[in-house]
Image 1: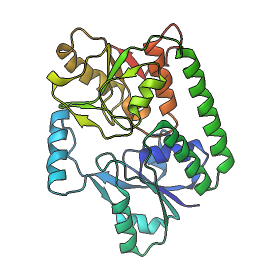
Image 2: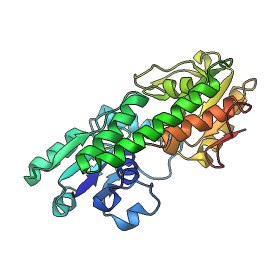
Image 3: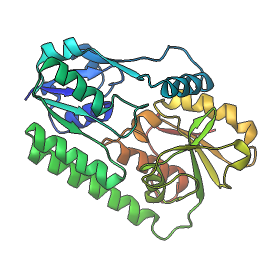
Length: 291
């Protein structure tokens, strides 16, 4: 099957269930598996200028949202030439990836009858269901089911390891200028890792808050949406003076926190290891770091 993935999480899922060779299109953000953009045409790019600081990005996003302008640009002609049979996209967040409505408009313009599978999880179980859905719709049901079973086993193992331990209050900052409290599956991620999430709403949208109104926490995790560990360290260092009495962790959010793919389980394991180092093995380098 010819598959176009217009969502980094979907690209990761497709590769994890053995469909990487079926991909005919990806986005500029698709970076897992490594080198995928060198092998598969990129048909989605960002509409945002490069090189902006977090506060500048927030200002541009707010301005474009207010004017009804898209955050992403799809090369509809290129997509049409690639003749996908299945298109993987999302409607969860128009800031994070191309929304399904834009894809439908492009397909209508091209006269394409490609099937569109929208991946819109709000919980960890929803993410696992999305993995199964991509595998089943893409023609790899057995591999997908086996992967979901393995991931559930790892989640169960973390749950047993932290079950009877004291739970620190954990504040996850999804952005730092201004501060955003993480929603969607992130509070559940904290809970599964043996913490008690403060701020944010389970299965809800991320929300902004003033620094003075941040909830009390025992640990702060800086996991800026779409950024890796190096950038998370930089943003965490910038906010550390504002939170001098609270331990601060930096986390690779792009891979292990906000991307709704198999590596969310890696993220739960990494956070559990940081919160409960005497019960859960530390994560490999590059995932999470204490300032």
